Image (cartoon, rainbow, N blue to C red; front, side):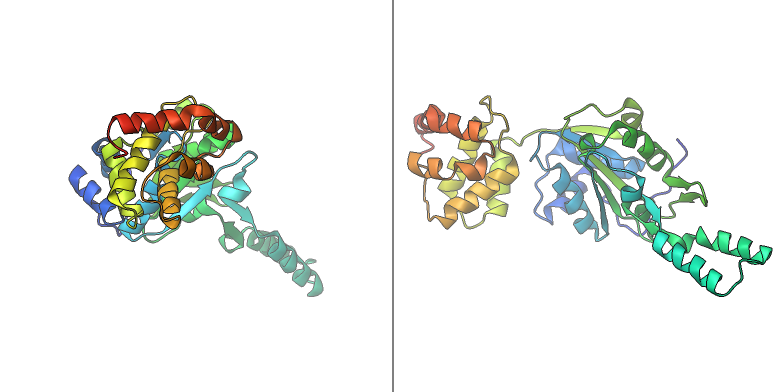
Length: 313
């Protein structure tokens, strides 16, 4: 891998503690291991590859970093069938056709020199429509490039990204290589629904993002749901933490914890009780089988555990 130019125009944090403090300005609670991985990615100018369960804050990290650094966020939302035209660039075919028709109307195509000029102009840089990957390489100020849920894209897309990640450039057959003057800060996320190619992972720093522990999740809830009574926030976090130990199809993420807390506040709930939990499970869980399991007895079991721990007092 060739040496990378440092991100242009950005005041980057100079320590792990500075990363934690920077993200905290945008109300993102970051544990030290994740802050260390992000610091090293910034310091070494390497992409950061984040894997973990949905809802642990991977995407939010990239959005928060862009806001904290005051730079643009360019996002590639991955899905099956994603191709170069949707992620990197495509030629402006409508404009090319207009140029051809104008040349035909002016009767200039009979001249060989004019034909060559037209052919050249049809594939000039001005004819390109830039998509996020190419946009990330053409900014004057280093942006944050988020390649979100890469595991949803087809495997060939992994291979296409290798040039972008390794050399901060994209090769366009008609124009040659377009190299970044202000290299992007690249964050890639995956929910691990498929394995990402090893060649791509080797070009990145890697970090597995865990669900937060009780203390950190409670801190997040306090920041994101400030209207919730302290006792209710503690009960919600303790309940969700226990729910994640169950064999659910989709365990609730941090975003669901925040949503549930805000929903309970909207209902003027002051504490958790069986009826309130049953009526609001659709905020936490997104699959009927999981909801049915909780309503079938697991809710009462978890509330009993909290009561035994004196959390429901």
